Length: 118
Image (cartoon, rainbow, N blue to C red; front, side, top):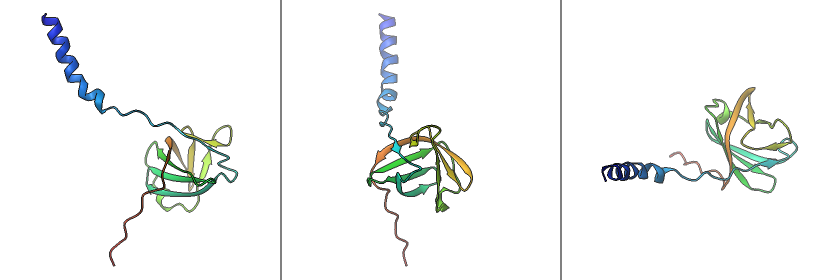
């Protein structure tokens, strides 16, 4: 009986942790990324980039870490290592710096930037 109570208590303690885990978003890919497949891009911060493909679909790319020049880049490159398709295993090239991707998921357009008061 005591073992059953201990097991129930441990299960109850672990339940909130299980509820906090969100399901992984399905990963996406952008074909022909180095041959006209990308229409536009917009950096949100130093580790998040929104990419628009030629069909006007938006994708959110999260980077493995800090990419300091991302917010100032006027052009970026894509390293796909194989077929010309960008996915979560790809890398951004920003002003000569390699910035590996952590995830690439379909999304809406980037959030609007707040206007500065005049």
